[in-house]
Length: 282
Image (cartoon, rainbow, N blue to C red; front, side, top):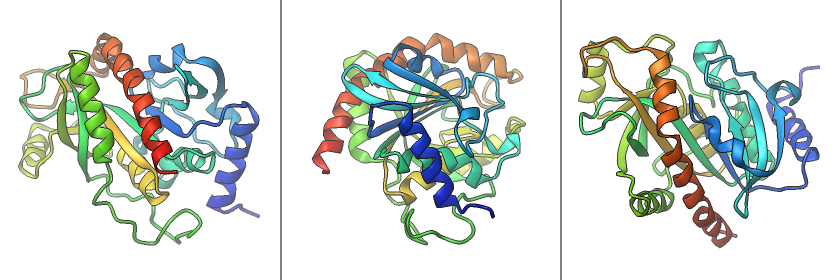
């Protein structure tokens, strides 16, 4: 008999928790080229996705494909070192399943990161952008199908998808670190082909500052489960037509590596303050 989604998420969460004594309340999803943050966690346990029941396996370059549970300073965290995408052949529900598992394992606040193409011409390569909203153009929603009230309501509100307080904290810490932060709207497309210049003109017209192939299914499921979200994009390339040159994935990974120091410093600075906010909410 096929197990329902809730039971599969519970089983995977129980397995994850059996591997460590830590009980983190903050989770992170690290995008293309941004996985190095997880390498420096202390008291860390590394669990390959292949070992976690029902967990999808990442096939994209720049995604290590393991869940790392450890401490950043004094803050316990659960870190997805890589994610899966629609373009790998997964459904939106499968893409977001790891967030279901994190939620059932006790995660209450989620940091989503990604490598994105810059549409807003004020951004440069390597810019860090805090998301205030998104546009879902992937043609799928992870909540499609029967709703399980144990996860959340049938029609979850998405007005406050990205927590304003977390965004304020991230902006304050970025400024303190000497990083010039931005705030923007992320458009999610299915990929894997990069967008055409005409598509980028369209996205700019409808209000997008960035474009990528991830994050939105995870954000929808996280809000469905009542998690608060901080999302940070690293602008690893300017989108098609902004600069007169072709787009290549190697450039995405290289820029990710180049800004890793700033990115890791920002996450380390943000986490203790996010932990304080989690404690305030009881």
